[in-house]
Image 1 (tube, rainbow, N blue to C red):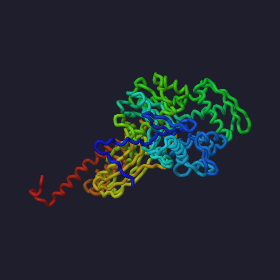
Image 2: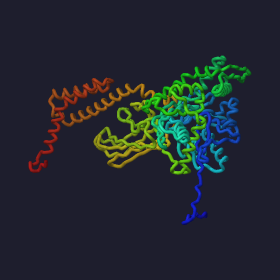
Image 3: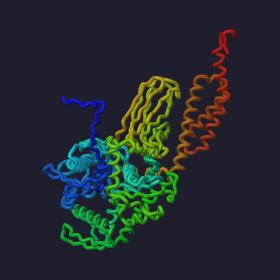
Image 4: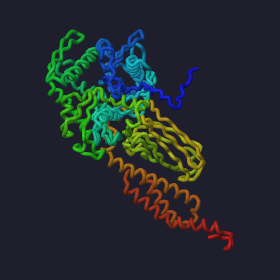
Length: 622
């Protein structure tokens, strides 16, 4: 048994043992791992001195696999078993997959997350990502000579619950303890802020291989507060490659390329795109599988024109996020560029024109996310002195709510709330004697449940039977620092409780994520009109139910004409409730309330008379 060394008076304390924690940027095109050494973060190279690891995995018939450069080199020869851009598949179902982006892979649209058909069997995006993470873990442990105690892994700010959970699952398969999932733009801000001691409002423009994120941060005395985030989970360097690929097909007249030629051409146009970051023109020279040789000159100007619409999409989202933050472009002190796609001159020119200042270029855009993640990992592992600590305040990109009567959404945690966060709200029952309540957890900005993303459902059972509106059910949502949600519901009087940790089977479709916020603003006026109508319909349903109950109990208090008037008003309200116009419904509500007013008074008097019947005056206490 090992003995503990005890510090006695006059003895020097034991030196602090650093715990090996790393930052990992699990990217669409490339991935890398970084660590803090000598107080500065640095990216770790492989045996050949390369810090980037291509996010490519190839599966072989004998069960072997190749990861990184070895897999990338054989991609055109074995395209169906070489998986590229797997990050875009994380947390996705079969219906969410854009086959053009992921050609020529074969997919099995199984329940839950999509599966990829390979010679080594079906592979999930989690398994493929785990291969990449394992390679990075081994690189770090081999280079540094010890095992990792944990890692901070970065994800796009717009990754939803399923995508974040899938990332954590992949790390677990790779044998990595996740200290935290960190949004990529926030990690980049950490790298820039810690290096320069910057303060003020900063924008992080993150255009990676598969996603675009724009985050606005307020840096003040070691506090990194994300105040707004926006983006598009279906927009990245892969989409630029696709446009250039289609341009090449059009110019060369290729109609039906083989899977091998598709992979070969996609690789070559990506190389050409990257080369045009430093050259005015390049020559695309490719020999296809049938021996036909293609030769085409591509210019930087032509690339800018071909991809102009994509760049404008990023600027539109940038403007929207700035408005969310209540800022104008000129109020931003600096703009940090993140992601390999930001090397494109057209992107840099557009960003500079939008903000009226050159973007920050002090850190390699391919490395900046991993470097920031390494700094956060070093802090979470306890390797930093307290005076060096900083406070990191990230935000929730989309609102979390609950479905209420009429299919409406009541938001419990609004988007841009700082995480971790917990919020509670009280609800009640709709019907007399109701003993159970269904809790439907939703994500999104729309007013109707059908227009939002369904995350989970669970039942709160055992509510004591009470009159409608009497029970008090407190629903609590908690979002941890990784952006993962748990929900609970508790009836206050009885103490019955139910809870769930939200783990959806797969995430939002690309189109849903990309357009969720945009749709909410475009449809805001219509949504509010629909919500107002639904609320009136619920009010009408309650009034109809209460009136029918009163008639069943005390119809004898009415004469024939009064009863006919109430019956007619009930019928009118019922018809108006089934319609789509608010004005007739409001009028019918007011009319029924008016014609039943005298009836309600008589019922009150009757109740008082029954309560006082047979009692003496001196027995009544006032």
